Length: 131
Image (cartoon, rainbow, N blue to C red):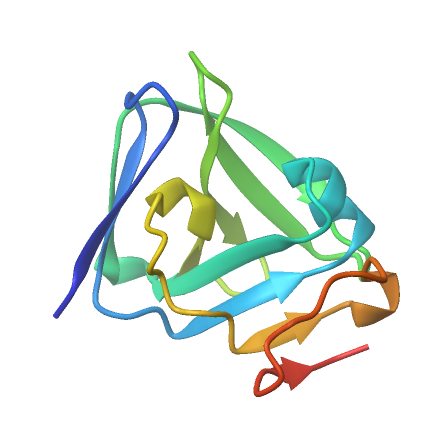
């Protein structure tokens, strides 16, 4: 069973995930674009019991496009978001894939909010696609 370590930029806040993610997706919604400063966000979903968090975080609650809330945990020192907890999925923790800093992390299998996708972005063709 693989173990991956997600970390903030300074290393103070970490999330260690055991096993493979149950979902690996990219989101093109405007909130994710703003949160990441990128045209999309990629996140891996893990069962809560498979993630061990260490360090101190500050929280930010964001209301998504469909009205659901998510609690984002970011480092007090460097500001990096290391994980978040979607209110609609209480049994799971989401970890931004970039926090793993693993260039060989698997490609996303789901792409959502594609109606807001930048014209030059090309999701993997075998991914599930949602407008």
